Image 1 (cartoon, rainbow, N blue to C red):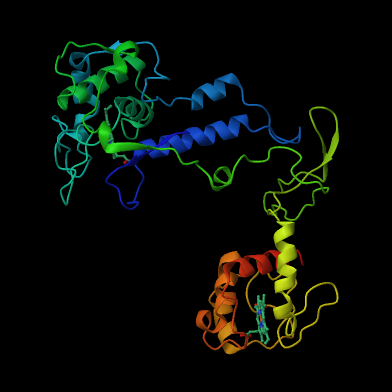
Image 2 (cartoon, protein in one colour; image 1 turned 180 degrees about the vertical axis):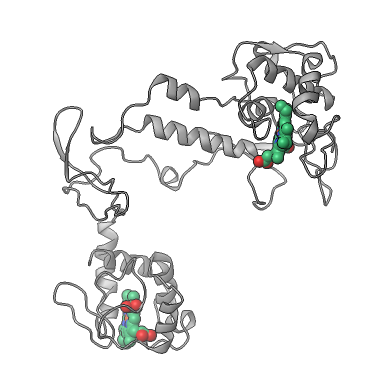
Length: 350
Ligand code: HEC
Ligand code: HEC
């Protein structure tokens, strides 16, 4: 799905603008309603009515707009009645409520005034936003014609439509050009990390029978170990097991020779100079029974240090820089690949 990024936004600033939220919501809705569930006893297919209730996003080309229409002249009384208390009769914003009009040419100022006229890339977002979220506190109480009329009126107040009798409809919607459309570029990067790595695996992703590694203890929504698919086959169900890279782990086994002087892993592992490392990934630091940790490690543990790929990577890169006073007298693994490999290797010992 295509996202928009503001050309001027160099860093994320607070609350995301509405169109980012809509895209995210729309993506979520798509995921929720299209991901096939493995087990028949997990959820059910959404009904067309439920999908329709979620599927209200309007695209820049007008896709998603309903039948209907409205003019600025139709919109004015509705606006005065239902919007002006907050947004001001001229869209200037009462008190600290959002300003809807003006701000032209201020985007490169230190304090840009971002309004529909000065900032928003597409008129479709105006329709979508008013329909979805306004009036504030009474969202989705407006009829489609009212939303067309209000959108037309807000655009009229911003001099984007100049005839108060111009009827905005689904047919002419895409012809409206917003002043700052060119201030946005399409961001074609995939939405998620998984997609960025290539096509995600959707079935039979692991050759081994899948193991349950975690249970949702509070809600107990984890299905039993077996379930029946739509085709009537019996399958073993997994709670989402963290991805494990066996090749990388094999490399990690070699790297672990450097640790082996002090650490053991596996069934018969015992504490030696260093604590045994079974189950270290994902757990709190300094938890192995009967091992006498340094004060530094105890302090880090008390402060909530959890060993994961990130924190363990830092520790292994330069133990005494990451944790001043640690007892681990090991010069560290400067090579990032070695660190990733040994961390992968450690994942398999529970
Ligand atoms: C009770 C006060 C209130 C009323 C009434 C109200 N709004 Fe809003 N409006 C808000 C608030 C608050 C926001 C910002 C919401 C947010 O950022 O989550 C907002 C945001 C907006 C925005 C987006 C502005 C921007 O640049 O981000 C539009 C467009 C809008 N309102 C249109 C309308 C219309 C049209 C009506 C009348 C149908 C209306 N509003 C009624 C409070 C109100
Ligand atoms: C010279 C011995 C030595 C070597 C070599 C060594 N360690 Fe350690 N390691 C220790 C000691 C001692 C501790 C306890 C540190 C403390 O209490 O401050 C420790 C702690 C750890 C911990 C924290 C365990 C916990 O229970 O919180 C991890 C993880 C760890 N080492 C991983 C490794 C890995 C992976 C390697 C190899 C790349 C390695 N260590 C090499 C001695 C060593």
